[in-house]
Structure formats: C-alpha cells, structure tokens
Image 1 (cartoon, one colour):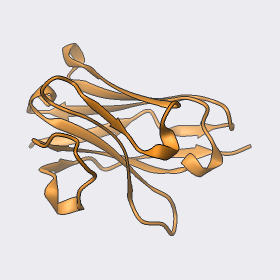
Image 2 (cartoon, helix red, strand yellow):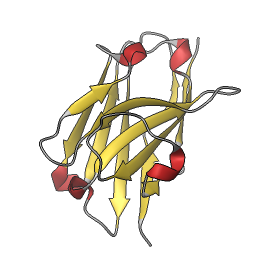
Image 3 (cartoon, helix red, strand yellow):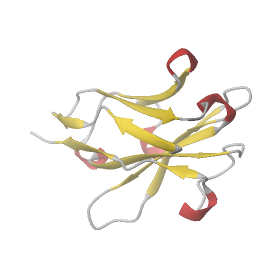
Length: 125
C-alpha cells in the first residue's frame, strides 16, 4: 500500500525547535514534489512549504520564512521539515502530500496523489 507517514511532532515551548519527517512506503519520494500543510483547530488547512522533485527548488509560506527549512534525505527516502523559533501560532496538525508539480502554489486537497495522516505540533508554555 502506497502511503506517506509523518513523524516528529510533539510539545515544545515557544522559541524551540522540532524536526518533522515525511517518509514513504512502497515508492520513491524523490520522484515526487512534497508539500507540507498544517491545520490549526478551527482554521482552514494552509500550505507551509514545498520542495520539487526535480532540482529541489523550495517554497515557503510567509509566516514560516526564515524559521522553517525543507530538505530531502534521499538515502532515507524522507523529506524533512526543520522548524526553528517556533511560535504558538505554529500549533496544528502537520501533513505532507505528494504530487508531480513544481511548487507553484498550494493546491486543494484533491490535487495531490498521496497524503499522510498527520503529526501534531503544539507550541505552548
């Protein structure tokens, strides 16, 4: 069964860091563009960051620029989202999604070929 699995979420204090991973089973992630989304309670899902399958170009939403870094670890067939200087407003469930696009925008849910089940990130004192 083809699927994505997120991990690395947890509870962290403001100013802290977390490292999220998006891993694939049964297919090779570097053939796909990977996008991270998040959804806070009572809010709509929003795009966070994206990395292309070809060339590794990246894109970041304005609220996370300068704090989050997306990268690939092809040896482990994973995509990493390094999150630093976390703020309470970063709290939410973080999802990764896969498609063959070029990171030109954050698309509706149905656009993507695969989704993970999400990992909870809570930034709080």
